[in-house]
Length: 167
Image (cartoon, rainbow, N blue to C red; front, side):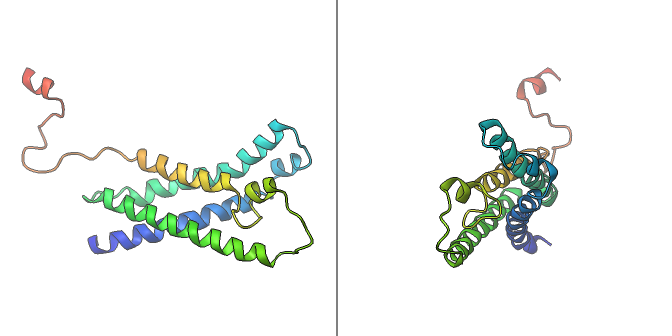
């Protein structure tokens, strides 16, 4: 099982990023999104972007927590391969997005705001979603419980040297 941990972490990070973007696209059909579509004030735009990024953030926290909470020793190595998988998925989706953008209607002029924030618009598929996935993965990793020391004498050993002198 230990030999499969790194490829599984890589694949899990890749699937998380692509799945997080899919969750953001699915969030565009929610009623809250449709209530705020025509409004251009700053608060409505912020709430809409937050509403689109929230499912990706929650998915990333849960996915990272459950996929990296192994009890084996090399959690740090798994976290590295997890991030590499996410990074490769990010490069893949950005590259595919640039090709899809080149195939769109050339007579239509897209605003930079739409290109950067729309979850359905290539090439970036909503930068707030990418940021939410990365932050959610980091939060999920930070929520993992601290590892207990292993080895001889680790059961009764305290972590604070000041407390061990009081015994």
